[in-house]
Image 1 (tube, protein in one colour):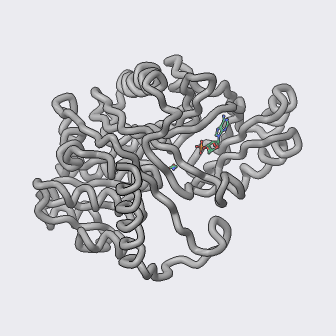
Image 2 (cartoon, helix red, strand yellow):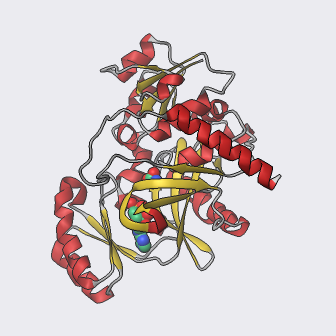
Length: 362
Ligand code: AMP
Ligand code: GLY
């Protein structure tokens, strides 16, 4: 079967690596991909993805990032009769609009922080003065991971409201929500809109430097499984969050197919939703997929075909970790497209340390 993978990050590299293990795969293309992905896929950059998929007889398009999902790529593929792993535009609102996600959770009693929605900055500030700090201010729309400000004091919270203007249309409406004090974890789940199957839970480390210090980033690394997601927490997440949100979407006429990402805060032993994303997490995917024993392509096809219930998904009982090496200056101004060299030497260092670990602990 012919696969077209959309995206160019470490997450897509992990997806390509895992898809390449499938006996179902004939040929993989990646648009635009990256030099790591080139080991598994032919890199292409078509102006028209739908036309490319038709021309190359693509059997499944796998969409990595949120922007094409929110912009309706999967809808356009469906019109052309091409299958995709990834949700349609209506379902992608779960990430594309924080207000949509919060209101859906409220309506169906899915545990999340208390919140109010504002389009008037003065009204938001009055509410913040009434509630006090710490408090969290979020732009409604997509803001490249920068639209959330966790304000520790009142002054920071009030100026955060003014900063929302910087996000343009994404910040014209804002959510002000209760600060949740706990430990975070990410649960990614496969779904066909009816059945939802969680993957091994991961923990993402967002602070720039070692020891959880420095500014927030898009994620400096992740590991899986995350011990904070105990069996009890996992069961609660499944029954109180994952199944209900898929049912809530369905009740709203939305069939969610693809990967649903639940960002959770574990507060007093129970999970609450920080956010939903409409895609695999980055860098969580790089730590989760190495633990997947089953055929990823087969699972993705089941999500697209609506028969996920027939899948039995197996996980290894090991652990995996992903460490992000970023260009100097990240996340502020930094150089892009620098070549990465020394990978063979790095692979050897990792293989040697795994051997030493095995000798020591076996
Ligand atoms: P989000 O983009 O919604 O995931 O928010 C980015 C980060 O802000 C999260 O990973 C949390 O660390 C933090 N955050 C968001 N909402 C809250 C909240 N209500 N309470 C505490 N921290 C939060
Ligand atoms: N690791 C955070 C995200 O994928 O949104």
